[in-house]
Length: 342
Ligand code: TXA
Ligand code: MG
Image (tube, rainbow, N blue to C red; front, side):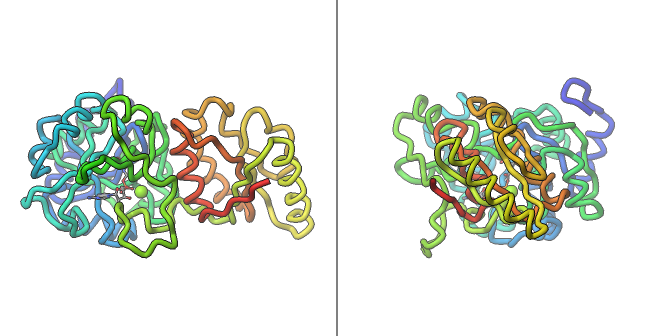
């Protein structure tokens, strides 16, 4: 189905599955989600099992009305109301103190809750049909890139969920921005399409957070999910940063070496440079200036490299401002933070 042509009968069936404690994968504007009833601890347990995800990594509760925020959050500070008005429905998740009625299974045992009101119409209809509060992580198996197509949900979750709703390719392609509102100064835990710059405009003082979590920092991470290696492609991914001519020359030399050793090489590049590479698999994520397109294509490219069995993958680097910050955050995580500076 599409957002313009919603299959009401399928949504009703999906809602029924959710109300009975089952799982439904569904499109949102960011990536596909794996939904279960947020108030049913058994549903949350099933989500962890289906994803193969550690149960201390909390889920995002999806709502379809701003006023429902007060049904899951114990306190809603002024900043949260301002952000909801400015960015909801949309790709922004807020961390707030949780209400006691919300099961600890859904929040990974934390006393805070992540809440999001997605703008995808299929998602909104499903949340409503499912009772209004749908816990949903991204609909990938743990450690795989988040799915941007229903086909990828099927690859990862077929037989592990009760229904997969096919809503075509998602609009944005990277997961929502996460902002923690439980401290004095709001802090970004995961960069996304609602950028630090936009959040600053609306709230004033916002901490941009670190571009990637410090893997050597042994103190408890703010967003528990951040400590796990994410989006890991099967091949070794290396980011190469520097002037374009040096980057292409460096990568081309690596490609020759890998080819001699019988290893397939993939390159994640941009429209401007795609003809400069001699790799087996060269994939442009879009024009360098068009960060939104790059963001939309990134996870698809990583998945394709898995299917095509790229043993070594090189990615160009991107500016870490605006949406580029989200792109670099995901790339760095996928690369296990392996970066060559030229
Ligand atoms: O765009 C999205 O946010 C997608 C779609 C499906 O809505 N969902 C998504 O969920 O990306 P997931 O589970 O893949 O990522 C949620 C992140 C995890 O890193 C998790 O640790 C963090 O949010 N998180 C959830 N609840 C939290 C909490 N109470 N405090 C801090 N971090 C939390
Ligand atoms: Mg995820």
